[in-house]
Amino acid sequence: MWEKDININEVREIRSRTTVYFGVGAIAKIGDICKDLKARGLDKLIVVTGHGAYKKTGAWDHVTKAFADNGITYVHYDKVTPNPNTHHVNEAAKMAADFGAKAMLAIGGGSAIDAGKSVAILMKNPGKTAEELYEFKFTPTEAAPIIAINLTHGTGSEANRFAVVTIEEKNFKPAIAYDCIYPMYSIDDPALMAGLSENQTRYVSIDAVNHVVEASTSTVASPYAIDLGISVVQLVAKYLPVALKDPSNMEARYFLAYAALIAGISFDNGLLHYTHALEHPLSGVNPNLTHGLGLAMLLPAVLKNIYPARPATLAALLAPIVPGLKGEASEAETVAKGVEKWLFSVGSTHKLEDEGFKAADVEKLVNLAFNTPSLAGLLAIAPTKADQEAVRVIYTESLTPYNK
Image (cartoon, rainbow, N blue to C red; front, side, top):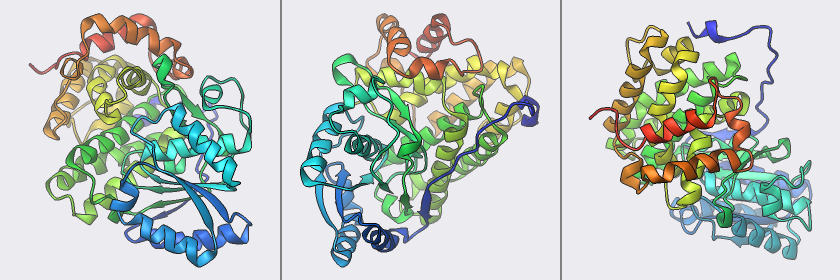
């Protein structure tokens, strides 16, 4: 039924440009990647990571062995935090320049990969800063070659052209999208994800669901984005409860990782709108807020807003978590409550008030949603009119649960 929402006369770009090695044991492919890098003369790298996951997962042992076997030297920037900021990017870019790095390898989830992509841009644009990049003061056409070893099943950044970095001084959390930051190679190894905590498991998978809800309903959505999205929600609905109950279940990790990968490709094609545009001000104000939790708190109110505009698509997409939908505009509130019930069932029970946001904060958040570089562009492709009043209502209705 979702086909009804597609205008067959509108031409869409279908994107997927990264070679992704996917599957349990895929980390072993780092040897082949390093062999190819060496052959291309890319024998000096900067490695960008967070504080510890790159080691705890076992990825580091494989990477350093592959470096040694192929004569690759490197410097290592290991200060990236969740919601990385421009200072991290500038510091790592200086380290890369001082070393003479020719390529960038990131190990981690979306934070490390996004920071690494940004470093790769600055490596090819000497004299520029991360602040200039994320305030759109220049448009990059080149970046150093990018390799991503993904450690979570949520980001999608390992296979698309997006990156997000915070400008802390302004509470800005913009997004960039440039063809030059598609990774050359990526690795998605579910075995590296088995150590994710319960909360990480929960919220990265919720991030993937949000990716496809938005990509499938934007004004630039393609059948490809929607078709991928339907598979994503089916897989997350089936395998997230399994992974929460048994973190070592490799089948569950595999299909959650696959769901996240194709969700990243989905939003590379259909882009994003309300939920991400409204979450970025939340974690821009509070960098300690988990991105996936921010999205989860907003999603029901966003669905209430957009369901009447894309009922057939959303009925098909959400069928695994809100069964029995007919694709009728009148179901909007039912969908909002049903998705919130599903979120609560997988342990995502917080709303904005639980994270310290109050009604008095709504106006600041609305202003950030429209003034943060790039976010107005996301709102412009929402399937409903994304004016300040619509955004204000979503934030306000996300303060407390619909299901009392």
